[in-house]
Image (cartoon, rainbow, N blue to C red; front, side, top):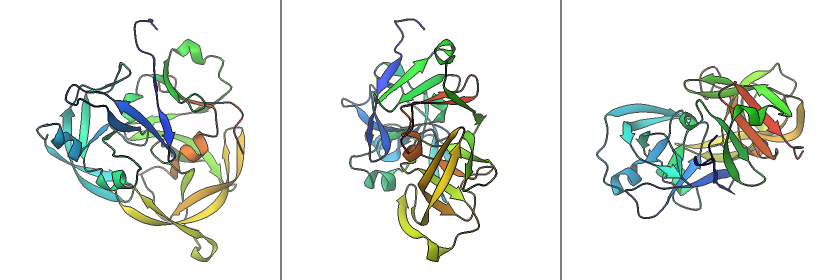
Length: 264
């Protein structure tokens, strides 16, 4: 990669989420975005779009975690972070509920569309996101097959000794794991409120998780009776991903590369 091309940008890991400062000519101050691989496309908060004076694009229906709402697509936005260009098209949608659950206002999400056709390393230890070449990943320690679908990215994992199941790689999920199972016994579970597009009261239980060659015990897991997204058995969030020093999403070769000795 040419040295003249920006190849990395910083993030802050706060509240289990990856915060990134985004610049656009329409705003004198940087905007607060989350790096969210669980979002199909990049998103700008509807209130931010209105504040910056954008004319709203045509309406579309938007599906989230057990919720749906109206969005506006495509919203054209010239946006960068530390000189790295972000996708040109954004979905304008109301993120007010998610924003209120965060310690600072949320202006948008950098979604899975940013990762397509790239090799992107999330360095949790250094709190940097790097754009790599294929050659820079050749000596990867541990790689899992990564299924790249139009709606998101998924890998296989085994939960509590189950057969491997597809989980969405979701850096917009602050917790470790959400898992779809019909064997939810409320008396055996604690309860936790999750706030995204909707406020949910989710049963919680500790599970064992096998992710490639790595096994984790006592992983806090949100339990669901129905699929969150079609063809997926749950979400793999930052609570597990950040146990590795570096996680590389290689969308060119279809690999999720996990590096460093994970904290158990």
